Image 1: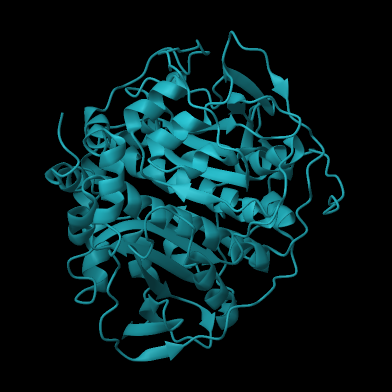
Image 2: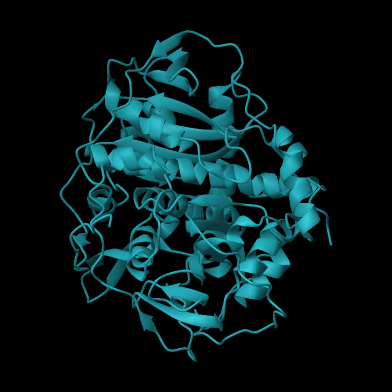
Amino acid sequence: MVSNRETRVARAYHDQTAHSPASVRTSTHSLDWDVKPFPFKVYTDLPPLALPREIDPLAIDTLTALGAGTAGAERMTLADLATVLYYAAGVTKKRAYPGGGEVLFRAAPSTGALYQTEVYVAAGQVEGLEAGLYHFCPGDFALRRLRAGDVRAELARAAADEAPARRAVTIVLTAIYWRNTWKYQARGYRHLFWDSGTLLAHLLAVGGALGLGPRLYTGFVDADLNRLLGVDAEQEAALELVTLGPEGTRAPPVATVDDSRHPYMPLSSSQVDYPLLREIHVASMLETPDDVRAWRAGGSGTRVSEGAPHALVTLPAARAASGRGLGETIQRRGSTRQFGHVPLSAVELATALWAATRSLDADVPAGLVDLYLIVNAVDGVEPGAYGYRASEHALELLKAGSYRNESSYLCLEQPLGGDAAAVIYFLAPLAPILSAFGNRGYRLANLEAGSAGGRAYLAAYAQGFGASGLTFYDAAVVEFFSPHAAGKDAIFVVALGRTAGTGRVTIGTTPIRPRRSSV
């Protein structure tokens, strides 16, 4: 097996899946609607355990929640768990189409609305729920128990950290490759982390709002965790862990973990394999707890260097509050399909950038991804190309001018990229990241960009405007922002602006209960 340190694999994957005008125009790929994957994983031999449907409204202001990440809850209940799962991965909206078709949209954005991210729950000390390993199905808002008994000690061993054995719950995010590769082919590996990243933005904000002290883990023994979940790593694999809830007594050791897999409903009648995706994932795996500890230590000092600035444009302080609760913001969120040319204010943009760059409680450092912008229509900010310097909360002017046409072109010639008031381009210096973290650093760069994009989404909808994630011409993005961006690679794009048109998805009907008391 290729080692995580053989970083040629990640470099080759990124280069081979890059978009260019030539690659897009010569592609023969078309969508086979007859085999579009079913959007829900449904285990056929396990009974559903219905979750409470009276969901906490999360009235805490969205911007407060994005800046929080707090602990303090003395207990965790099944109602708390239901709230976390609903606002992170539940079905919140639906849209009906002529002819009787219907699409169920979920709380967090997903590229192509394909929802390849799956959610598993390792529960140990949750009031109202027996200890065990569960799968969460958004389709019927239910848990299905895959393993009885407390498995948190095995999670702690895989993560090479004792904390998951004491925290009330660990959420495990996985991805089913085919759900995304059906449309995006081998490039879909990037999407696995963009999409799990946006879901994480929700999960961490909601967990913090409930005082559950969420902590993210990106390092773990992949094979052991996949075996515990009972997933076939050729089709689906673990991506990240998040611990939630107060610390209690350490979970007892797990004697043995059998290689148990439960049958589930087929996603489609046939599927296409993309070996390039599987190759990069296998090459970024860690094999032992010692490998995990060494991996974390090796990257502990890695940061993106901002360098000496060009002319700085001071931004107004981010808003302390938006006036919209986190629950309402998530209910209203939905990727914008058309932007008008009405400008944003400087404080609206500043707040979105502040939210995108909040630090997270995680097992490895953030700060691996740089934010570049094309500003088209922001009151008080001259149109042009900029870099965002988070340490000074300021924009670094790279070149002034109107670049709507260029931004549209960079975003795979999509009008959204030109119509948006501002477009955030996430770039990363992959060479030093891969040197520090190995191939797994490629996961980190894409995950950080996805999570930052998810927080920008929430900040946008909290303030009353829209956002949309976009794909891009890789080399052209770097070239546009060079020489400042020389040596970096394009990772992700999020467009911000005011929505044009009146088409809206409908809000779901999950009943909301009053905020519980703190007693």
